[in-house]
Image (cartoon, rainbow, N blue to C red):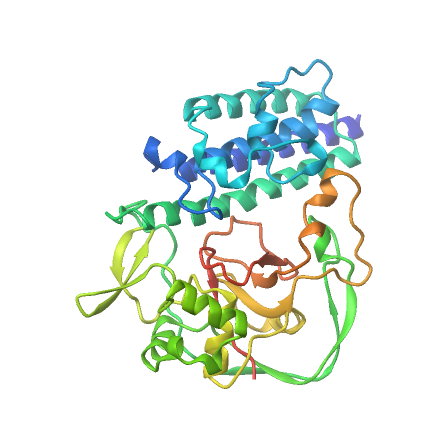
Length: 394
């Protein structure tokens, strides 16, 4: 009897968690106009409508269809429409063409979400979860939380490249924080353990936990703020090749880069687009929307460098993190002992371990309970649209 009661409590808790996470995705989209749901300005940005459909497709494809007897697929075309990069699962719309999907409509996508959510509720209440399915459900929920952060990135890019600079919200979207320089933290040389351990969810790329030797170093206790970065701009940082990697210098020339993404020099003032609209630069706010090339060039200009991801993790208990994803100087590669999962789930992280750089921490846009010091985020070094910032090491 106690085992049945415990199972019921766990099922109710899982269902509540599922509903809360699914509702949060829709809450993020609530301020949007219907036209905002379908725009794709660049290949890296997906229309909000696509995110809502893709996260639903994950639960339908990996949980309901193979495991729920009698489940009827909502629409046989949706596997083609909402598959992202899973070669194992079949053909898909090319990423560049997601903005061409005027159909299915936004209303159809919300109906799809409602249908799958109702079926998932029945499935969970029937107690169909074994250990393997529980792990898959956890992955699906964390996958949706990743897309919630991407929704903020993509919505900001869509609205921030509208010539009218419309505000996403008139209310403060994220808490305002001031970044004041407060020195460096000294870390001793030695052997440190890196990677996830213990209970709770983690992605496979956070394992296996392993030892690594680090030389002594000093890491900044705070992030670089806008005022600091403005000094780099005014000192000609974007016009001096000495601070830049070769690829970074090519990026500067090709893009005619002169400032972080969303910064605009208007009427002799630096302005930047925020989710609350176009505003004057806040000097004390942590610099944001910096790519790896810019972060590395700024560090070189300061006569310092970016931390390796092992240095960042080893020191992370001694400083506050979570406001910006922080670029590291580490390439995204497997840890010693990393094992790629078989099948489609193995495509989630492992196949991207090339030509990418690691970011650590979290950002203002990261959902609650979706961050930990072992989390390995990764992006191409040219990308700025994520909420990326800078922490220095010397």
